[in-house]
Length: 295
Image 1: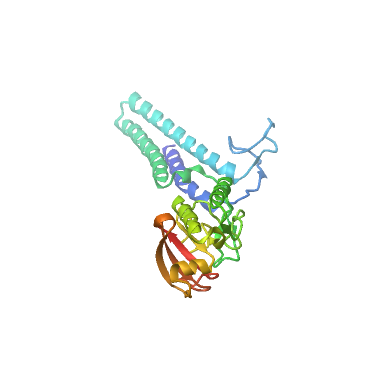
Image 2: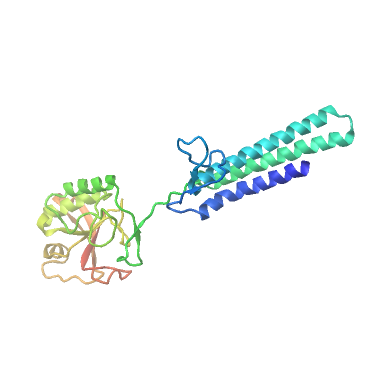
């Protein structure tokens, strides 16, 4: 009997360690329901059915409950072994039987500690391992972006933030609407653009005129350096911008860069870098533009 219980504890402990990794491998976005012949407690959904017939389950429901059941069985077996060992040790005068009872208690405690340590180790590595969640957020794959970049659709808050930034840029054009459905081409995001960049764009508008500014790149994905929280945008080339940076006869070339102050009393400062189509250090520029970083 001792060997049977010890082997059972060993098997349960191995399952304890392996179950989280089984769920990781077996994850699927839409687990298929199936009808079980003999439902295990807590592992099926029987609805209002009290006869256990027609109960259904899936991996998302079965594995977490099976895991909990294994833990409960392991704890129950350990309790049984500790109780039997204690009774044997206390009710016998035979040295061999006392030794046997002591061994049962010791092995049960070791097994229980092994199960507990498994939980602690997995929780320390990543608490989500023990959640057994089979829900996987499916990203939107943008096939027209270099390397097929995975971009998720914008949330309601991100859409609202984008609209709020656009509202602050009075008279300034943005070449596209926001990337509501996810994407990197044919759309421009301004959500998450820092306030110093917003103020800088408006300051530039007071210097060269808002009608001479068109934003062609913001915080949307697909850029090498742009992003939420980064004070940089792309502006469409314009004679007024070129004149501000290079004088009335200047002709920009790929890689040309200059830092300038503008706005009332030179309040704003930015670095303008000209990137031609196919240019910039990564050769990924999709069109001529000024890459502007606000300081």
